[in-house]
Image (tube, rainbow, N blue to C red):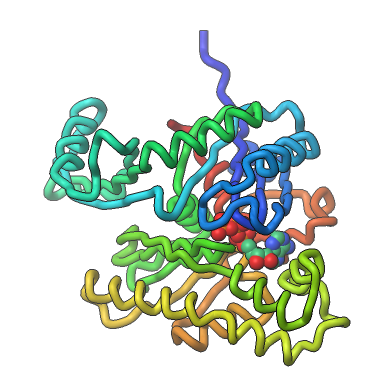
Length: 349
Ligand SMILES: Nc1ncnc2c1ncn2[C@@H]1O[C@H](COP(=O)(O)OP(=O)(O)OP(=O)(O)O)[C@@H](O)[C@H]1O
Ligand SMILES: [Mg+2]
């Protein structure tokens, strides 16, 4: 009589540097980690959200699934960058098809959305009981971009349940694990290889998001060149695994010298936000993604943009058996998993 409730969900984050998988189980007390897997991609397989080597990406996703659990079929996935557009607006408090109608109507009035060319989804940011209005976050993906990504996932034999966006997955991971302080304007910075997702929280809720097309790839290239390392060793250096064989002062100087584009991208985005939201300063920065793990990078960013910084731990309120994941050093690499955790948290459509 009752449909069997799906108790676990897998988040699959296909990034330019690595594919990350997190399975979350629903328990009596909340969420628990069921499985984790990370598999690095060849450096040019995905560049700036564009899949250059489809075969390599498919092969690596399948290998990761085989390694973790070949029975996995349903996955939540995400896209980011150029293919995604977001906007927000207020509508009257409604539900179901009435709300859908109102949202579609609003979307049609908005120039960045050509409703023929995009697939849309929405989230309710907040409901104002006094005015009986609700604020809607509209997320639209360009069809061409979305379809080719969905096809790729289907070609691996998996079934994409929800296609989310990296920035919202990061936000969901943050909201589940931390109390949002309404008095503190906060920016979430998910620093990846080619894309950095930025999410602003203001007055205790979501304000806006922006993707910056810059990440840690410039640092990787600089390290490879400066130390004349092959791809594998340069990758290890980025993970802080070459402490004994790489001069640390020189590494620090190399990291710092390769962040110009990233820093100016962040500064530009922050000043745009401040003028839009009419705030004088951003009080708090929460860093996640692989960039949070690159040696010397968080401290340097903090000093550059001059905002107090915290590293996001997406497993802060999620149970896991430390022994089961000992080989991964979860406490250390957790920030890398913000997107797949945020994806796996969603059960709904
Ligand atoms: N333990 C680790 N495992 C994997 N990557 C790591 C690790 N520690 C640091 N990194 C670094 O994280 C960076 C990639 O970050 P991230 O995994 O968030 O990017 P991505 O999701 O693959 O890319 P994008 O989101 O831009 O498509 C790389 O520069 C990598 O060297
Ligand atoms: Mg990423």
